[in-house]
Length: 89
Image 1 (cartoon, rainbow, N blue to C red):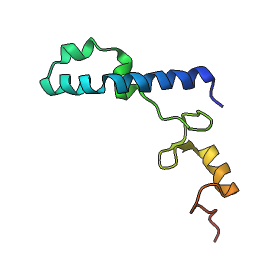
Image 2 (tube, rainbow, N blue to C red; image 1 turned 90 degrees about the vertical axis):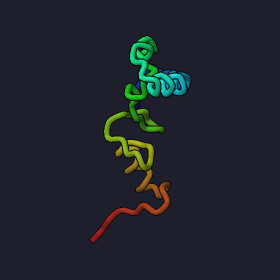
Image 3 (cartoon, rainbow, N blue to C red; image 1 turned 180 degrees about the vertical axis):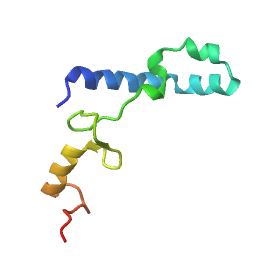
């Protein structure tokens, strides 16, 4: 599991992106790139990373299910994800 500090840092980044989203869109529409540089770095959506909603792991993230491959496998084998079954042929 990821450290709590990493997960909290990601939450703060998401809040900052949400706070400055309208202002960023306005500045981009005007073409005011100097104004954009004066905003906080964490206001950029490119600085966000996808993290597993359960463990906080950021690698091997499956967007459709919002979790990492390890968590996905555990949940799928337990039958917690509807419509997902283990393949056998």
